[in-house]
Length: 240
Image 1 (cartoon, helix red, strand yellow):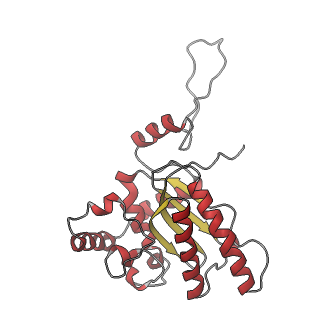
Image 2 (cartoon, helix red, strand yellow):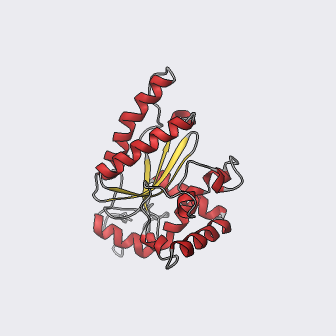
Image 3 (cartoon, one colour):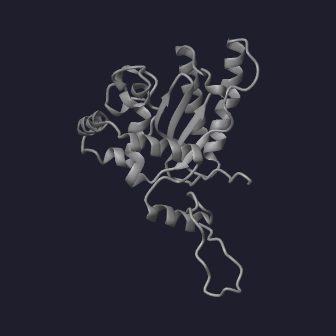
């Protein structure tokens, strides 16, 4: 079956995962992280993509980002790759691809999953046992959101601003949200939806999105299709 084109919806947040080829390390030292983030900031401005959250893990990365148009995400990721991959290969005297295929992405229902996705991204280093506290990992947006290290790369989403009337209130509220952690079900749902490219949200959100983009945005319902009233009519398979 032909692969569906990546679903990108302008002005809607998307969760993005980019992995190293064969899960190999793609960031080896501090300079690698810094130069990648600098190019990401340049590309985000150039292609009008708002970065709401990020984490750079040793062998993969996560972004939560809203593009202004349907081409912004791909153009941003391609631009960064065209700069970072040659830099990495020259520095470490290697050849060949750095990434494991094209990046994975899913559209996020803001009201239901945006803050959950932010926490999922910024708690990655804790789940991977790299640190005990997300504040101790320097290559994520967590310290920006709790006010200890403002980061011009991050464009705060309106739902983050709704956490409080002052920066202090927002930072305290967000710190408490992260302290509560995530359930294993939430982690699995976010990971699976992104890797499979299915929109993540309520049934109402997905139904509305399907009408807008005129395509299926989630897995087809399982089971045999219902029988038609007329035995002489051919079987039919529902579109969704």
